[in-house]
Image (tube, rainbow, N blue to C red; front, side):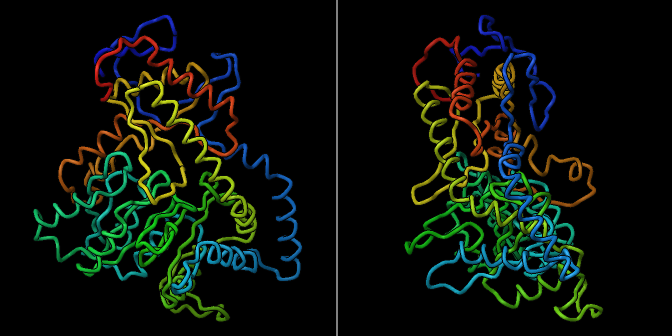
Length: 444
């Protein structure tokens, strides 16, 4: 912990002790009774569904009416309309058209992307060490081995320097690498995307964007205007689950590609290998990965609100960053490079030590504010890899990713977060450092 700073323990009059880090949990919960106020949830999807209830019921009734005529609830007209909506919204001027393929989860999307890119058993795929497990599990499902590399401080996205260092140090594996998966973590497009694309072209790799947390994020990639997350590589993958910036009622996913043959394969693959109009002909080993019409109807409603919701997220993020800087809190806040617009799926603050992070969470919990750990372990630290059940290669010490996992916590950020609730979050975070003794520098 930074010298000269004293963290509260949930009681503003009590100084912090050097208590050990409590057990790691994804969501630090707080009951209303302990604070006397309604808790501020870490995620706002419950509020979202409540606000959209009337719209959703109307849309679902329309799907039911259509189904009475068509007799189907999967891969019908609502799914195609949802795909068209995404294609139109995230199109790039003067570029080949996008092809959207809706599936039943972001995990399924990653699996399908690897297959569509021709990744086979024995191949290696570069994956950032800090991301959700699905990014790596999809590699295992096609028989490939993930190479876990470090991330960049502040953006927390894949480190191009770490990739290049690995290529030098492990020349024996270089020829086995067939793809790279930059993950746009917390809603921030990997700022090195232009250089990642260039390196992939030099090496003959496929680029699979994991944009599961970056709906509507943009980056000026080549000086010719904004490009959306998931539209720059060979294929982009999105989670459309209900907790994302715009999602469906349950689980859902989307793939984006400019390759029409790849899109045709994925449409066949998601439906057990069937071609359109050939119900009992199975032309490839596919999966049951379709999106249902009820989910598609929900997704279209949420997608219409995405731009407005993302603007609210940006405003909340700006308020948090301003408050943290004005208070001089020794926290690393998210970095959004020039020319980039984050979707702000999460707002992560990174403390200097795990103990400092834990005590911050205690103070926030005492004020009725829920926090989240995204994520408490790096991927190679997960039991499935530690136990040897799945193979992986670890590139270097992953110092940045490990620090993020140990010391990062996410503040509530969602469009439904009210202004007074934002101030409650800021006040609780500031109170965590209320007993500080000013020291020169003020950095971790």
